Length: 180
Image (cartoon, rainbow, N blue to C red):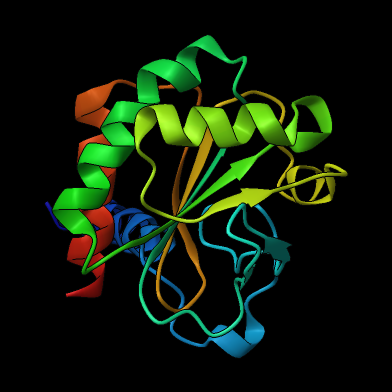
């Protein structure tokens, strides 16, 4: 009887340890000074600065609110499907989330990027990655690729490809909920 009780306590302790470890892995790091920069969930974002089609400079330093970084190109079919959703979500969350739409200008043209942004009514910064440095920094291998970043500069989620309207909306909502 004592052996069964001891086995039960050992199993209970192991379950508690597993649950604790999973919860800890899914939470944002509290000490950001020790968080490495990497284009992965639960890591600090790699810092960059790019010029937008409005000729302004945009940077990931000193974020004021959560940031969504979307890598795209004008010739990308899924990007065309996703574009209206980004515009809609920007209208819904514009006071709570910033969007940087990074055009892969190294494999696109600036004029096509401008036309695309105008066609879809992008009312958020459209940045030009002319030499592909930022796409390389973020290991972008497919487009669209979207990163969801907390105000503290920690990547909390990512979508490779267009996951659909509902998935995109839920990830925006999750980002806002983390910050509240």
